[in-house]
Length: 567
Image (tube, rainbow, N blue to C red; front, side, top):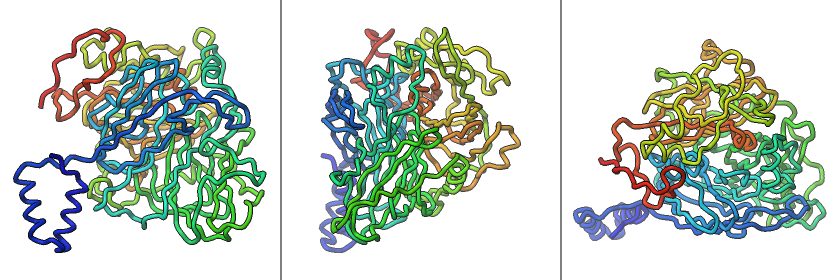
């Protein structure tokens, strides 16, 4: 017998309210004495991944659908839920999904990256099973294989707070997902061929909001509806390939409340820059004259601004949206200042029943500093992107499997890059890029961007504190500029042209974790690495065993499983 967390809460509330007093109290005590296990609830999903033909920008093209949806279906969960996602790959290529921002505690087996998992072969299925342990917030899932992300199969993944954990704002009338992304009219295979031939993707062809772009001809169906005087939650995520997106709503300011798993100080914004891979949640109140309004998403930091639109309709609306769109900001100094306005809400409860500010990251001694510098160059006449001079390639045997089976030396070398890159990085080397991290060390990572383009970085398996972003090059003296009190704990960080960003985190989650550019052209061409975090105890206390249903490939395809970890 299994009693869910919600059932315990229900019984507890009945006892407290004395509606069934002693009877329920005795029942609760009996269940406890009988050893009944309160297991967190399970959510089950069957996803059918297929090709389809749509015209997001008016040109028919092949896209990737999940259950015939573009974007894919939302996952709406609650802290500590167990998610079981059965993915049927009906494409003609191997396929993987990754769950960006989900920490996968002790469980990098479910990460869904080529360095941790064998891809799902065409015509077969694979079941992901993971727990959204001690997390809340707004996140994304998307394909991690080839250039499939350019075809779709991305969507929102929400984690709501449990019933007894207070949230620092009133329940909204409804909770909406807004997926914004740049888009190419070429299919994902054509884009991959371009990169394989040594060319760049070039400028995108347009911007989509939930897979569409309103034409403004009076015939557009609304993406969302709002009742007058009600407040709504919009979770905005950038699932694009390369473009920062500025998001705004005609006549409606937005109150920022959450960012990638952290409650934030609730400032009001007319528009928000959402960098690639980032998510944030805002509250919007329907307090304007009842009619249609445009939500607007436009590219930033490109020579030509591309804009996408979507309709929000008041339920009692009596008129079309105004054709006059709110103007986007100009330049990246504006965006940098907006980043500096984001602050962790130190008085809010987190996923566990403790204040967010109870973790004093600013007073912990740094045990290691790693500087990661992104570069672009030609290798054999073809474009490659690199970190500290190494352009990552995925071996046929996933790195985590090689490590688990004890054959890492046959697949990759550890620490192929130094923590401090040379002042002048020479020719790019292509090979697996793996850093060996000491379990539970508190580490400072510097992302330095000497290029003229924007960068957006993501780290799997963790949330980190984004303590600073500044122009120029980093030196140890710049630590005096760090925010050591209320930097937001998040999973992505942007780096502006010829600038740097600094993050803090404790590598306390054993596994193999990807650090990558969220600009997928760069990821595909090598701007990524893996952090190997091994627990010396090799214990189930720190890391789960290889799942029974794990796909095997490469050098371990027909190998017997190693002895399992024990407690």
